Length: 297
Ligand SMILES: Nc1nc2c(ncn2[C@@H]2O[C@H](COP(=O)(O)OP(=O)(O)OP(=O)(O)O)[C@@H](O)[C@H]2O)c(=O)[nH]1
Ligand SMILES: [Mg+2]
Image (cartoon, rainbow, N blue to C red; front, side, top):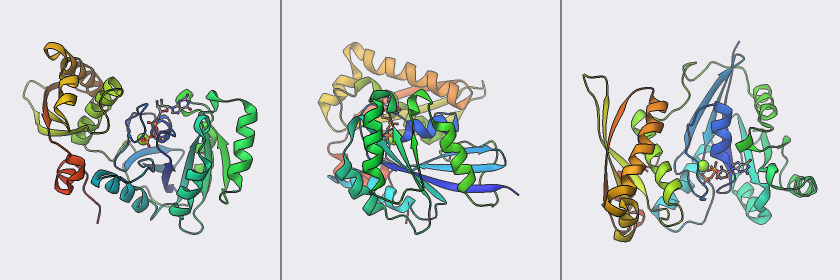
């Protein structure tokens, strides 16, 4: 008999949720950056091992709602809570904000009986004493079934989390093929990878206004995949920064993204990138939907 569990991954922005999911799944399913609010939509990372399939639902970090995109992200968090067999709540030990976590946990209100594990992450950045204090403090916030100390980016402490999840999820049939590792389509992988490279390269200058849309995705007879994508930003000044001197910025961005995509998709990608300005798209519900952030009804 196999085991199956959908596992929600929650926590404030920048706690390391996507890093942890990628490390557990062993593939880059969810993009990572130094900036908070990197993940926008729920992303499934799938791990099938020891007759057990765990589907990790990586969610956006909770933050204040300022526009239609934030509202969408908030909805993604709350709608994930339904139908889970277990949950992880991540905390960034190097930047504790206990009150915010307490509020988040109160909102999360996991269905009764769903095991929730506390994961104190980024332990590599703090002293043992600080870990101990955080552990004591957070134990009072919620009846966590277990508490783990991890450094997701260093791959530390993750085996124990995985083992505990395997134990706690119920018997049941797999929902995905044993070879699947993500729910994302290839188009979405392209969009997210380009957005990741843009965030990583321009995170100082360009805020959260980047969205990427694949316009064309064609398999050519020569075995190459031809992809045309548009990067949307909210301001002319952001466009200038990304394009760079003589187009150098966007050219390098394209080269890095293409390399990652060749690896991720396992074939040769020909990537053509465009950049457009759509002022305040995050405030415009129709544009938010058009750029891929459509609510699950
Ligand atoms: N030092 C250290 N850095 C980490 C650790 N885990 C994650 N990070 C870094 O923390 C930053 C945020 O990581 P993400 O995985 O994008 O965080 P997230 O929780 O998914 O963030 P959002 O999607 O914005 O909610 C990145 O720069 C990671 O490399 C860790 O254990 N130790
Ligand atoms: Mg994330």
